[in-house]
Image (cartoon, rainbow, N blue to C red; front, side):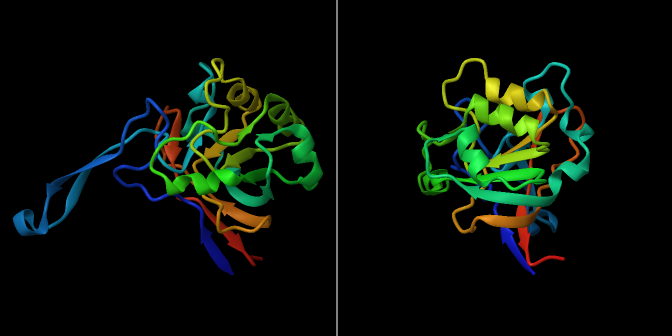
Length: 208
């Protein structure tokens, strides 16, 4: 059994989506002063590797704590995409029957090498999102901070997925992962009533 960490390190200066809260840390106490180390953290619900819940864009959508944990644990297929857009044609060529979780490996994973947010990342199209709602997908992931084309005013891709209660895993790093079938574990924190949560996402290969 091999465990592959596909999470981004959470650190000051990390890449965030424009307008999101920047991660920062402040020591509350130290071993020298109080006998222990404790740290105050400031970050957003969409910091680093994170899950978007339907409540992120739907007023009546489920918040992160109401999504069944089964969405975040189970078989997942990593699909490699070389095109700029991930559309239904691209997905149909590779998606295996019965898969409920799909992760897209793109050139985006190389974009993490710069600490600057880049707007030209690979994204999921509307027709790609519609196709995923038709084949029983529970979770879709992508290797950048957003799954939606930058500058889209209505966030239609998010809404298409959320209306079918499909969660979105964003900010994964798949640069060191080969396409194929794995077991995914990406559990969110139990934030009551919130729109998302950072996760520690891992893929397991050779697990039975």
